[in-house]
Length: 603
Image 1: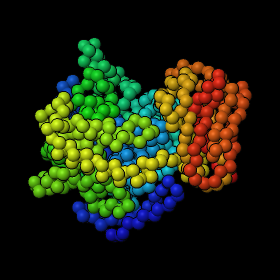
Image 2 (image 1 turned 180 degrees about the vertical axis):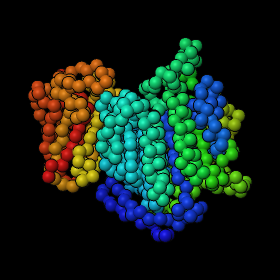
Image 3 (image 1 turned 90 degrees about the horizontal axis):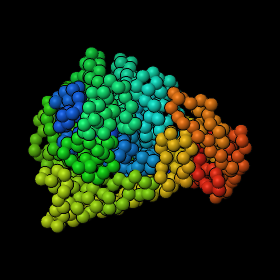
Image 4 (image 1 turned 60 degrees about the vertical axis):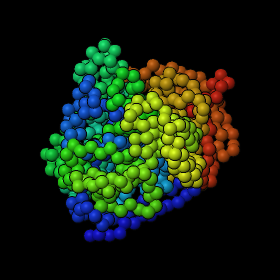
């Protein structure tokens, strides 16, 4: 049964798309037909203090707390300070600054396809692969989940349910989500849908003889904090007392906990519990900065302080002897999941994976000894996050970590053992350590700057047979204006100057580039409003641009907007390769980026 895995690589300039021939890898931990299932459960914006077991006496999370008590806990585990970067690191095993997805918008929330993803490697080694919920690594080919190793995907688009790049009208309840890239109407609350669909998938696939790799990424408790009142009502008194800013935040977490309890019962009833590696973690610090528990650390989402990137991490695998409530304080990070999980499942990573992470699986087993732990003594972990299309700074706004030491901005050193709140800068007393950390960072940055993902944008591909129409939105447009991301902003007609996109054209030919005021699923005139207002939730406001413009391959085109136009179409001829597009409307002599752009090859 053992076969060598194969990897076929298709190269085009600045874009590399991997496809795999399924093959079984030689197993080191288990026989091929007994390899464990893997479930990675990633919540959104929960923060390290978003569980009762993490010192939060206000929140009710009995199911996740019970799981934590049965698991191995990595107590010094780190992610990135925001959503997309963490997800990109999990999926690629590479730091965000090296995989191109270091922000949540403006063209920097698209993950590189130059190296294989964790899903592709599992799939190529005989696993069934599926993802549910939030992807946020690209909505177009070749960055979609189904292009990235997942055989099955049920997801919302972009960074959150109801954002302007998501299906118009979604609001957490009875929404339209994509099933393998095709819209489908669902009933129920979003988190309930993700868990329910994941369990249905596992039940349907457990009889195939193949182990499963499941990526279950909730969009909750990200804002807006919509949830049924029965979950938020128990926390209303905390708002009245000035303790909690938004009861829905804790309500969303309670709903996740309820679903987690259902998942645990399902795994037990389906005889999947013992041989399933189950991970529970969150993607960054708490999304609410005020009045939330942060396990005693300073900082929340977006911060380089500890509370922005130190998160809870629990893993259990009963059959693999990973259980028992043990705590491991070894410095570990999101980039480690790729090498760790493949190792635990007996999969050899391809040499071209270019992983930044470390296999920490030897630390997890109950017979782990001090020698194995010492291998991590010199480990350095980096945070280079910048919420912009521009490259992160080399040193400024960085966090360099070793053990419990944190070097911020290259000149502020904190010892988390004695200074949990990071109030005392001890850099002047530890100059050798500062120099050592800066030297490690210098080597890291020097190698990073050689990468295409650092130098240029990771591009969606237009004109491929894999996707008929490529959709670009102003949420991902490049520019220096404040980004738009809410559907309400589009409904109200908020104008924005960001108008640039970088796209790779798959083949030479003629293309139709259509500019729209409204998304096609809820179309209206450019100088008007849609006839449909899904769930009656928007306050529509008409705008009246006079012209539409398109700059493409150094050519500038312009068309007058007629009253009944729903889209302005430009027909262009192009060669294959990289192209910069600037597109938008002119309103009262002011340029504004097009809210929606649709690109289609027509010959």
